[in-house]
Image (cartoon, rainbow, N blue to C red; front, side, top):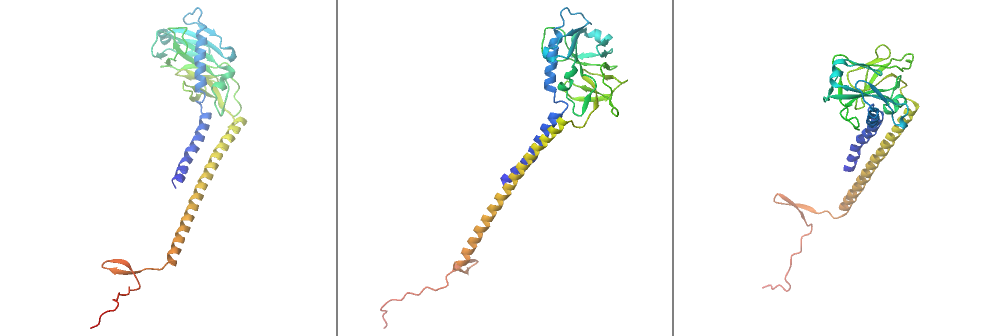
Amino acid sequence: MGLLHRSLAMLPLLIWFCLLSKLRAQSFGSSTGPARALDALLQDYAYQAFVNPKTGIPFNGDPPSNLTGIKISAMRLRSGSLRRHGVRTYKEFGIPVGVIEEPYVKRLVLVYQNLGNWSMMYYPLPGYMYLAPVLGLLAYDASNLSAKNLPELNISASAQPISINFSDVKLVPDGSVAKCVWFDLDGLANFSNVISGNICSTFQQGHFSIVVEGPKASGGEKKNNNKVWIIVGSVLGGLGAFVLLGFLVLWVQRCRQRKKMQQMENAAEVGEALHMTSVGSTKAPAAMVIRTQPTIEHEYVP
């Protein structure tokens, strides 16, 4: 019985494990690992563009040869100047007055990314289609321009949001509504309304694009769904068979016990029954035949 209980207890755990694996594969944050590794790589290559760095001037960098199609740029700024004056135009980004960073640094570098045809690979968004490439804006400490794997500074706008004016936007399909999407540093997607057709806004750094809802499930996704449900069905079927086997084992054991009890009862009925007699307040078996009294041979009779 304990084996059966353990089997039943494992059933919801196995179902949850299979569904959790599927949810992880489809979650918006599933690209966090590769995307964060890409950020670190592009930070290194963007810093290499600072041959003769000048404050407030963007320097275009060259990404690795195996990432053709990605564009990067780096611009060094004084923190005080960024806060007081902002940056009117940095590629597609417009940075207003009042942007601050945490922790505070004297100088910082804003690294720009345009992921181009790599957008979907690093930021997959099931159920949506990209109308524009994913653009990134990340801030780093500028005290050492040869540093690698730097942690991002946390920059945020206070009075007015940072604007993103997408220059390469596809037409919105008939019946669809375009949405801005912002990926934070954890890879989580947040949606908001598009402004004036191709402008999005944000109060924080991250990666941005414009999307529309696409087909609910593409052919590849349907195949993946089928595979997942086949796995789930196999697990459930196997566990169900295991549970049935447990019930069968219990049934056989109970049948054997009943048969053994029946045999014992039959044996008791065939044997001679003992008569009971009362001895005080206790009942005890008593013999049916009285023992013959002994007699003395050649008893003398006067």
